[in-house]
View: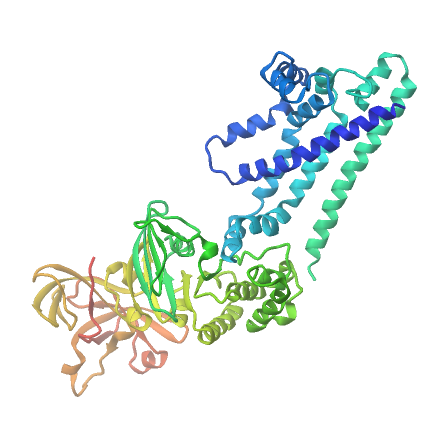
Length: 225
Length: 360
């Protein structure tokens, strides 16, 4: 069992979630409320990582982060940081790949808050921030929780893009899914099997916890008095 | 005075309202006529192309001057058609949500007092899902009055309720309005509801104001054909102005001359629509002592009788009249006493004060 790989996967998932969830809430809410004609195009842009092959996404990200790219040069000069084949690069790639998982469920959650409730909040004298924290966010919560579970679970298991952008550097970019691939290549099915089972269990528990929370919340809401 | 002047394209609105302070005014019109949009514009929830909204001299919106107060800053309460209770909060929390300007410690106490004012203090901990339609309406009302608003806007708040609950809540709204002295604007498509509750009435059609005024006057005196239709006047006839002399005019309806005491702004010979309430058409007994005081008396044949609860609607074909059917409302007892039956000839009186000339 490659515990370093497990720890790296967990760190990658946690960082991705920490950065992406606030962004997902902002972008998802904006998409839910905006009337811009560009909305279908923006939604398509955010959903693109779902339909593109991981190698295509990985190729473009690698090109974008390469040491000769504008971003690569900028990061190198500002922070003395190389994005390609490094953990920060992996986090950046993971954020991009998980955009649809973080934004689209949140958008659906905010779309479920009716105009009448927005109007009621305004007529109650609530400021925009009060309306957001006291009315919109609690009602859009199922969407936010779904986004969190999907982003965390998907990051844990991401393979293609991680391999393209991060390679297979132990302790730096070798996540659990890469470690499984590595063990299979090395004809070590026992280790690969143990890690695959562990990843399966973690993913199962994460998703089940998410659904369980939603169900408990749904029942509490329906219970009334 | 609450002054509202709006112009908008979608939905089309073009109206100027002047509503008395401290009274309940009703805006009545068919569904889809822009009534809800007017309330939303008054509340600051809808920005119209041109808007001027002021209450008691305080301007909330004036597009010409670039004045715009957002809804949250306007001292008003709003009860929508579906009540819009926050589903994740219980009744008292819903009311307290309108009291965020108060210290947290006092919100619950004030919210409970508001629930008590609408008669549901015992349901404070109930979730909106566990409340009946009438109870939800009361919670919404408690939330709307919680901030002690100067203006209470009610958008068809009784439409989803059963008849008995509606009647009960009508009484409670009157009681609440009287005790708070707040200006209330009620939007409804139900003319009977508006007639019962309001002191001032505005008739609306396709976003245009047809007529406004004190309810008891407006219900009796439509000024236009559209108003008469909305006010459910069953008699709409077309005549020509025969003689025009200030408040004593003669309309020629077919070959019958009908007097009216209402001034008409038209030249003799002009086409003038007119109406009369079915209950203002009187049956004339044979041998009446002073028929001259009854107004124009015409002979008509009874075409049809329709019983409607405690009255009978009688359709009459007037001899030498303009061709339109004249409808008369009688008590069932009067129908029996005077032997009013299909085919019978009767004489009816149209008093000059009851004959109302209209504008197209």
